[in-house]
Image (cartoon, rainbow, N blue to C red; front, side, top):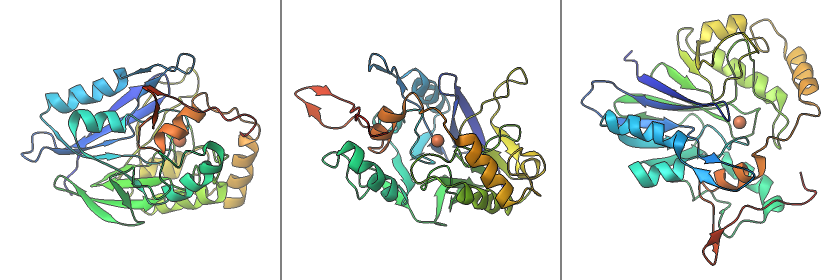
Amino acid sequence: MRKPDVRGFFDTVTATWTYVVYADGDEDKRCAIIDSVLDYDIHSGRTETVSAARVIDFVRKHGLEVEWILETHIHADHLTASSYIKETLGGKTAISKHILKVLETWEPIFHNEVDTPLNGQQFDYTFDDDEGFSVGSFEAKIVHTPGHTPADTTYIIGDAIFVGDAMFLPDVGTGRCDFPGGDAEDSYDSSRKLFNLPDDFRMYVGHDYPPEGTRNPQCMAKINEQKLNNVRVHEGISKDDYVSKRNKDDEGKDVPNLLLPSIQVNLRAGEFGHKTKDVQYVKFPVDKI
Ligand SMILES: [Fe+2]
């Protein structure tokens, strides 16, 4: 199997990995960008494009053509730069069709239907479960891997898989399952779907939170390493044990700093929405979260 090249960019503020998937030295310059980051200061409401600029510079330097701008899910801890990247480099924004559930969940909190359509049309494309597609000359496929959120999607591109927060590196485990629509049982089932993939497939994670003092942030582990060593879901751990520990550890967890702006902006594929005069706003609902 031909293997795509994967370049990861780590955003230290949100511990997020953004990926460019491409074929180095190939005539086919099409690439995918996965889970980009728009810098956002919660105190001032100011955005910056420092994280996105590193990705954009890389794409330009390698003469790549952006085919897809993919999201593994609606992130709750950072804003996506997908809209900014699309404006700057082109490409189609895409996410799983399960985003419709997430839109429905949040509409009664934000009442943003006027600029956040519930049919998902703000994304250029919404994938069906198990849908095949391509990135340049690489075959690709979607796998629905819910648990962290109901819309979490894994993208399989050649032998590289991008799992978002469905699973983290072996010494970190899995993503929290306490967001609306999250479900620890689904998270366990998703890990088993991923373990059905070939042992030598490369799993790229959406964040890394290295246990203190152990190592620098990393982004990839092979499927067999995850099966053997993932602290939460390695082979041999029962569903009941996983679910009770996951739920116990998620109890009382802090709301992520950027939850409110992230959800609103990410549900609009990276847009801040309608303006009042020439100003854009983020809503902070009172006593709703
Ligand atoms: Fe997430």
